[in-house]
Length: 364
Image (tube, rainbow, N blue to C red; front, side, top):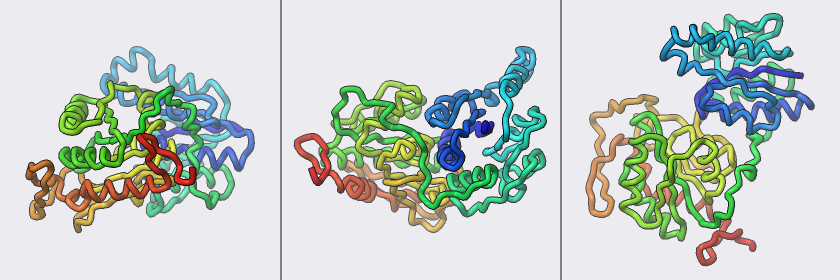
């Protein structure tokens, strides 16, 4: 059986889809998937053993210059690709009008997607031959597992979802340094943990005998990383890395500390112990998913607000790091202090002991 999956973006959303493929592969031996995905995330589906072919799409780039895209015939070339193989089924796992339109050119193949009460854009459901209702109260991973199970005719396993990625395949070479990765970069301003909190946390991690590695994807993130590294010893700013390079750094870490960002989901998919920090967003529906995952949520009454811009003008909290007093912005992070994060990190590492500068299993 061959199925075409349409799940084009974003990084976290693409990663959330992987456990559904693992379920399907266990329930239907021999099933193979082709996957339509945004070109910037094309590496990820290929990491799953049930994915046979990845078909990149460039909607983000095409929309910037529609006329050029039309003249170059990019859409026509893409349609030719998805017509290159016969499919038994198409599953639109995105639930958007643009994803529904991607599958539309395929004729004589059943298309399955979320119904109008379950899809992010209800109009998309009009393009499906079978519409599946999935509760919004479920975590995003469980919603996708339910969609695939209904589309392919099996029951969702009771066990926690398995991303199906072999973390060892990323390798860490000869790197034996014990380190923690801080994933400090994210898109919304309301999801940014204060810089000085990262500084204090780095000091606390040093006290555990661990070093810190920082990565970045744009100038703002690089500046933040360089600032943190300038304030604390044993903090290294990595060069700009592609997704495979970031994955290798994460795979070699003892643990991860992350704000609400796509790379946090990547850490979970690689089965790394992760402490994730949430203020404006809701981990119950879109937080990192898997074993060894700790969610630290704000205790402020307005959280989670799900807003990209903080509208709280009344609550203001002061904090101090290295003698520097500052206002915690957004204020929802005042209750997610570096000490609280470090305590959670320590609990994740309780099964290991520090011998010299190396972490070993407690029963070793």
